[in-house]
Structures are given as C-alpha cells and as structure tokens.
Amino acid sequence: MTTLKIPTPLRQYTDGQAEVAVSGPNVAAAMRNLVEQFPALEKHLYNGDGEMRAFVNLFLGENNTRDLQGLETPLNEGDTLRIIPSIAGG
Amino acid sequence: MLPGLTRDEILRYSRHLLIPEVGLAGQRKLKGSSALIIGTGGLGSPVALYLAAAGIGRIGLVDYDVVDSTNLQRQIIHGTERIGVLKVESARDRMLDVNPDIEVEIYNEPFTSENAMRIAQNYDILIDGTDNFPTRYLTNDVCVFLGKPNVYGSIFRFDGQASVFYAKEGPCYRCLFPEPPPPGLVPSCAEGGVLGVLPGTIGTIQATEAIKVLLGIGSPLTGKLLLYNALDMSFDFVKLKKNPKCRVCGLDADIKELIDYEEFCGVPGFDHDEGSAGADWDITAPELSERMKNNHLKLLDVREPHELQISTLPDVVNIPLGTLAARLSELDSAEEMVLVCKSGTRSARALELLVTAGFKKVKNLKGGINAWAQEVDQSLPIY
Image (cartoon, rainbow over all chains, first blue to last red; front, side, top):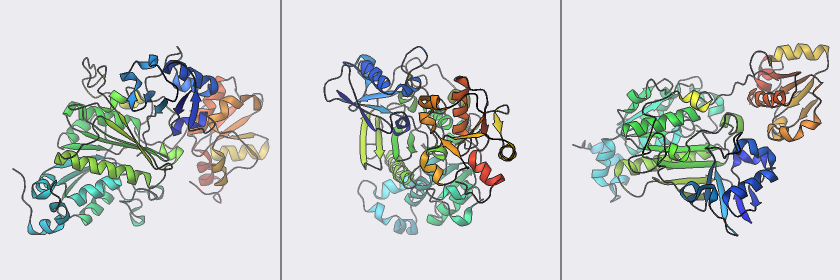
C-alpha cells in the first residue's frame, strides 16, 4: 500500500480524509485506485480522454514524479505520494 | 554606487548592522534596492511592513481595492479607521509611519497585461501576494520576461506555499503549474476561508526570502517549494526542477509575450465573491421572497453544514456542493428548486451540475444568502 496525501481543496471529495491508502504497482495505478475509492474525484483529476490533468502535481517523497518516470514511476510498499495543489489565496 | 546611511539610519538599523551577513554594506544594499509587492492584502500586509522596516529603499504597491471590514481579520497593515480607504494609500501611510526614510510608490490599478511590464521593470524583485490565478500567472510571466525573481506565496484555509521562482537560476511558477486548475475546483479564500494568521506566516517567509535574495545571502527557496500546514505545524519541502517543456522558460518556449490571463485561467483576475449563473438561471433575493409567499419552493443549500449556523433560510435541505454529485438520487428533478450558498458562486456551480444531470426547474439565488440578508431580511448577518 502507498499513502496518498490529499490536499485540503480536494478533501471535500474524500469524505474529509487527509490521507488515503491506495494500491498499485505504479503512480498511474495508484491514482486509478484513488478514483475508484472516490469517484467524485475523477472529473477533477482526469480529462474527458482519461488523461491526468496538467495541473495535478504528484510528488513521491520530495521529487516530482514528472522528474522521475511520470505516471510509470514504480511504487514500493510504504511510499508516500502527495498531490500538491494549486492554491491562489493571498 | 551604493547609497550611504545617515546618522539616524545607522541608529535605526543598528540590529542589522550588528549581523555580519548584513552589516553596513548589506544595509546600504537594501537602501539601494527596490521591490514591487503585488497585492496589499493578507500576504502583502506583512511583506510590506517588514520590507519597509528593513529599509528597502523603494517599495512599489499594486492594488485597486479599498479596505473593508472582512479584510481586518488578517490584513494587519490596515486598521478599522481605514475602512473605505484605498488599500495602497492605507498601506503606504502605515509603512511610512514605520519607516519615513523609504520611498513608497503606489499603483492604484489592477495588475494587467497592459501595465505589468511598465510597472515591474523599475524594480529589482517582485513579490506575489495576489489572491487569484490570473494575476499569479501574469506575475510569473512578467518576471520571466524581465529576468527578475518572483517571491511566491499562496494560502488556503490552513495551508501555505512559498518559493522563489527565478527562471535565470531555476524553475518558474509555470514549470510547477503549467496550467491552472479548472475553474471552481479550488475555492478562493472569499469562498473557502483562511486562518487569519496564516498569511502572516507565509508573508513573513516571503519578506525573509526577498531580503535574502536582495542581499545575496543564505539559500533562498529557489528550486524548492515550502508546504506549510498550520494545523499540523508542519513545514515540508519538495524539490522543484526547471521543466524543459515549460511554455515560458523552457527550451522551446512558445509564449513570448503576456497573454490574456483571465481567459487562460477561466476566472476573473480578482478574488470574486459575487456569484451568478447567468440571467436565465438566476433569481434575485426579492424575487425569491415574493415567490415563497405564493407557492412552495424547495430550497437546496449547498454550503458546508457549519456555515448554516451563521445564517440560514427556513426549511432548507443541506447538501454540500462537494457531495452533491453523489447524492443526486435524493432530489426530485420534477420539483422546483432554488439553490443557495453564501454569495451565489457555489450554488451556480451546483446548478451547472444539476442541469447537466437533467434538472430543468432549478434557479440560483443570485448573490447568495448574503444578498438575502442585505435586501430581504436585515436581521440575518452577512459574512
């Protein structure tokens, strides 16, 4: 299992949960598992063609998965994945 | 040639002069430097106060708003007696009270693609204290085009972010966020709220970073993003790399000049709090009041349950917007329904969702329950 940290703006779609346990061998599968658990998230994270939206930043530890192998980045037991949200308040 | 310090200034800055990393040379550097602060709200307040106190010689302020009472819970540069005063004037007066030896230049206008390059080119560094996505992308692109550092800070509820985006030395804001989120996904502070002290924490970090960058000391947040959570009191850092595909600072950058940022982000360039679903779908508070006298209308309040404790209309059904999609089966599409929230923004989104799902007899209370409290029932509070 991988721990996925959910940012505050998306918690309204995860029953308020700040962390969700997701399963899958890589980032793509783990994210699919997330939207299976919380279908209301799907339209926010994926576009109509089923591709991850460009504003979704996924970090594995301190690294952006874009700088690793993107959605193909493998996940190991105990990894922490985190969605870094765009927020604009000031 | 760096400006000298007067006898009075040497006394004023004595605690800086004692630090070897600043010293006389550093303080003269600060006096000879300039900073442009975009926004004089939650983030801009501590940034402006601390940069003024630190003796940055010339500080520009961009804002076009006036102080109102909902600002005062966090915008500590303004005071109750300044309600109704232009924010740039209120901030300037306070800064000059803190430090009369600096120059404060005010721009009482929105920061836009038309004026941004002209205003920004006269400053060494920009500090992003805005409250909306279009102005954040604009500030970033201006900094990339002019080769200036952008000291970034952003807040929501209990979460804060800070970084130094400097395309000459590292990633820019667009390297991390190539595109804005879809309109409506991330609530603004006017809709979602913010802990008043949060911009104090993040703004103070921005001021710290600005002073470090201007002095050339320490390790600024270039290539790093700070993620702060006030509830956990956690400070996490992640690494940011330059995105080779970045459209403004990447290898094949195709954005060479400022664009229409409101169009790019799909939202206005201010923290909007006046919701409308369009004339065909809106009902005003007085109209709703009349209709309720004559016939039964179902009222669906899409706010969070804790907001209903502040103000509520009689006999509402409460389904928060975030859960509405999953709870459509609880609603009857044949029934006439009016959607309610604080200011009409979330209810307009709920209306869109319901119409897409086949509901036809739905209306949006324009301006939300705040409009009702203003125009129909003055015994209700406005928040």
